[in-house]
Image (cartoon, rainbow over all chains, first blue to last red; front, side, top):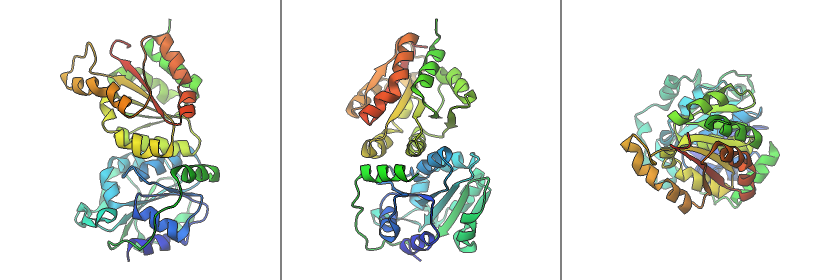
Length: 179
Length: 164
């Protein structure tokens, strides 16, 4: 399974949640699969999707889902530490881990060897899952007391999707109005 | 007379700032304690300034009035977030910065970044004000959030060694 199919699978269960989508192809693929006002497409600032999601989860009650990538998580590993140290009832970080920098030519990341799930555990995440071992719909509907980290191992490769034809201002304002 | 910490704290309160991320500096020590005790302010210590700016952006999307407390050495860690996130989406932000490496700095490692801090803000086209006295600090910090939202961009407030 590649990223597009993984996002397609996750999207089936998303209803009222706020979604932060990582820079590049993850955002573009989500835009094609299921564009909605409650999606925030992060067009720059690689690495900060999980941080934006954290700030959002700390500031309102709706559930926040971050669609992040392995390369991006490696760029901001401190974010896992900060998230794991918060009491959050509404935060789910999904690491779409294809072991590659997908938007820049599929160069390998160190996640070919280094295991993000073990890193998340060691930073203090209590709710840590492999996507393929869980029923995501059930996880999504549960009341939680701590943030969730979901590791979704996938294969590298990008779908043939266009660019996002929304301005940053449009992405921001429709997202803010939807909360 | 107001002390240096209390002046900034009162400014933060009158600005209505209610979400703060921080990376510590010895000169911010007392201010961080006050903010941490304040139940109207969500205070999140972060591992790195860039991460903090991401967290603030998310909080702003949910309607918070956001600020970062940091040392100027962290400006280097913040530049991509200030441009590719804050400038791109026209997010406001108040940056309250302990400006090290200025006159009287005892630690040599602070000096190179101290020398270029104002120029970096200038090249980023971000307003950067030095506060010299507590009275001035209270007023400038107090107006900071309104100014930042009017400008639709971050603003920086620098407190150098002699301020404290």
